[in-house]
Image 1 (spheres, rainbow, N blue to C red):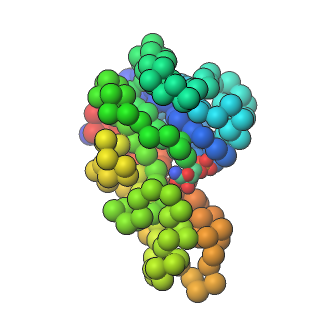
Image 2 (cartoon, rainbow, N blue to C red):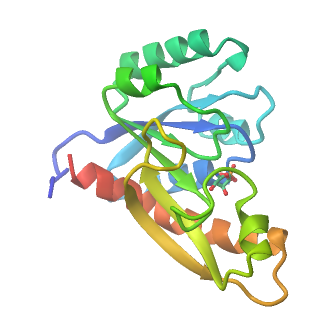
Length: 194
Ligand code: GRF
């Protein structure tokens, strides 16, 4: 276990595409006394992503990446990651798939949060698919990112019970609440493994 007393906090960057509730939550945790990390940079592939308001609010530098040219977008972000000494990239609702080149080139760790009990329901529309299959449980998973979609090693997972009257919206809200609990915990786990 790594002791961070007297050590500098680990720099992380968060990649978003949307609302950014996980981003907000990670920022909140980073402000706690014993937190081991600092959110140094935010990246978005959408210039109007709601989550950018949190970067602005907390005065965290951010960058919009134009994925129409994916190669350039990734090159640009890699440059910023290196310059800002980022050790962990946290994907939080980021809707683009990272290229193998990006994954190989970034020297730190890349982790993602996914709203299902992986390996079940990789990809999109996880809640509706779980409901359509009459699952009794769904949940969320934080995992390392590798070149196969939603397939990297699991870090933490949380189960959520599906009730009879749940629809995709209700289920997504219930799961999001758990995402906010496990993402900072998973991040601490990754940092402790350094
Ligand atoms: C979350 O459900 C996350 O698991 C998924 O996209 C959603 C993002 O939500 N990958 P937010 O933007 O963090 O609010």
